[in-house]
Length: 175
Image 1 (cartoon, helix red, strand yellow):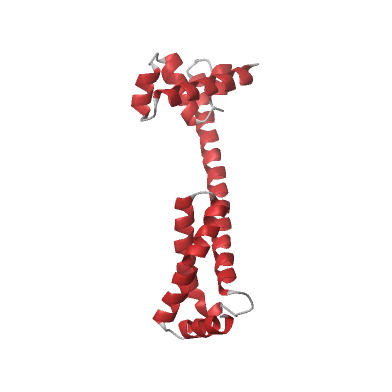
Image 2: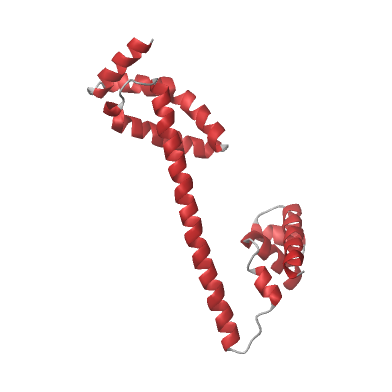
């Protein structure tokens, strides 16, 4: 099998589209199943396996035969996944910085108008947006869990649990 696959890779590298298609089809399921286990997200795994197939098509000439073709594909898929994680971390870091700056600006605006920035407001900034919204809608604006659920497109039970979690976090912050 190894010799036949190497011959198929050689033909694909020389421009034989049917050889390339055959290689990719044969290994697609294997790479996908691997990526589902790595990502724990079938949709993300599907995106990454598609990117992996494209990268394999673009770089078929770089395959040197020192490992199994499936191992080469998994290596490419793994690197694509790791790159996505790194990019996501950088984006999150950037978003956190922007959020922190916006909070500082808002606090400054309130204080410049002689309005008070309370410990509760400070603690609210550390809640996730999902928890902050439900706490505000329930305890500041007085909406019912059913109304909050309708507004946010979530079940009333989810609105209730988010509110409860948000309140627990606020209590911890304020102790």
